[in-house]
Image (spheres, rainbow, N blue to C red):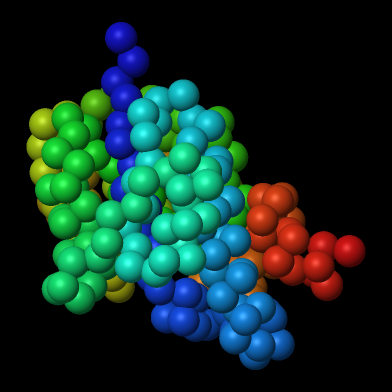
Length: 207
């Protein structure tokens, strides 16, 4: 039987999300919000297509995000009162109560389902994580079946997750490791192949 995982994808309110990408949309707040939403929608759309993913749940307090995710068939859980990404993930994990939980960053617009699936298989049911392309951050964290997620996202999260005993997964998965925080990251994701939502949000980049 396939060892399936439920993935949590945290998405900030769009006015707080991806503030370092404002230059990519010329500083226009409406276009910026559309880009932040597009990044999350492409990430979630790709994750839904990975055979080892049973379901995807977003953690967000933004009604626009929740509405668009519902259109994809994805449930949303409100952020908890306590601030911070790790608290949001702990809250989401408690809400789901699943046998196996994972956390996927919401800014992977070039994500390919086969790369995500390969990482899930490489974990072999162990606590594991995928570092970002710089090797310092984390794009995917997987709990062992029946165990807590224990997220340590933030500066140097790859090292922190390794210290908790999580296995680093270092396969040839460029789209899974290309999270987007800056324009440079976005251009690298463009080279890998942006998802439809992000491409539509950046017409000047993709024509």
